[in-house]
Image 1 (tube, rainbow, N blue to C red):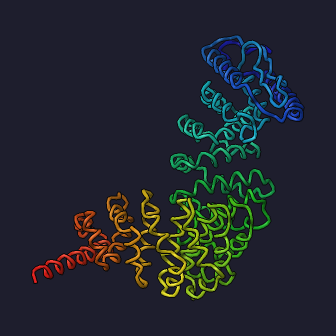
Image 2: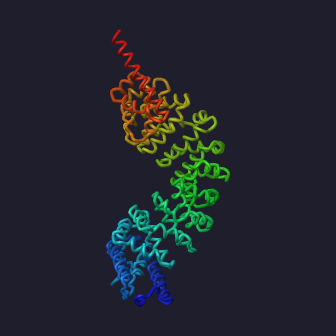
Image 3: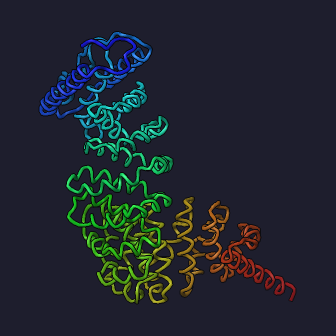
Length: 546
């Protein structure tokens, strides 16, 4: 196949037809070869150097063409052949010089090996080889093509490689988000699916989410929710909506396009890959108070609670988060309570997956706050309080922080506090005090403050060595840690020995600075703690004088 004459602005219709035919024909042949080799050798790619070679040749020819070169090499498509080692496969680069077409065909062959699949041998290495060989700028140029036959493998490769952080950064730096959003408007469902999937993976980053909003991609994404018969496209679109809704300003945009009502409608009769994304999006949107009411009015609470009985960890993580967000609304909480949702959440604390445990514990917190007769409800769970105390033995910091938050709410009831004290909550909380994690510090301090309200618990905390580490929390840069710590120290300062420990560890100077804070709760707690330390000092001076 010869190249068009130099200076031609656009290939002729005949040339374009031959060009596209070559891609289709070679792609089909490579698909069959890949299938045959995969059957014999378990489909593993070994030689990343050949991958770099393909991209370097493609990039070199692309640059030559841009400079006005009139020669285009004859296509010698890559092929797959088994290596001497039967379980592996060697990707052989094209003979002679390559060009953009050869590069795309190579990508097609590699896509058949599903680079996103973890079982694919050294798939991460091959993705990195593509990136280092300059593959991303080349893909960026190919992404400008008006031909869908070109765009589908290009975007497909991008979205598969976008699972790597280096690719997501490069995609953003090359300005490819605009092209991805533009191609969302294509009439080709496969191309739309790849674009939405790429956005789904890249939207973990806030700048990408902002770009999608800036290029007005939300309306198109919401429109794709209507294509309910195409489950792959639906999964990609709901995933993109989920990740984009992490930013609250984006949630407001989705509200304008009635995305919530459509998402609630997808809570039933959908595969798990769709449900995970739908529920994730609802959980993010439910952080906005008006959206909690919208979920209820659209009948979304009942199917959400029903999904708590599932077994898929990824789905359970998102469902517990969504139910917890909805439970902040009192009317929603009444429905959740009637559907026995709190019991289902509590049962998930026994799930072996730490992410499920943590999100279930976070969801329990608003339920305890807002449920009618929450005190009796908590005690009614068989071994429920013992279960949540035993979770303090976890090594996962997110689990520990969420359980401490739940204990802080449980301990507001005196009878429940007495029960968890009997289960050994005080020494377990004290054991966690030496942590540098601010999230855990905050909720641990809140739990300690509440647990001081029963019997001799404040004395026990001092004996367990929890006071000195707590003083160190006052040096944190997180204001919420300061407030929780000041409240805990105020409660602990009601024991004379704890006051001595605080004074020895320099608490007074730190607390004096916080008395002038604009946070009234922090002001009061800091002032109360300093007052208790000062009273003890005055009492000692008076006793010494007498």
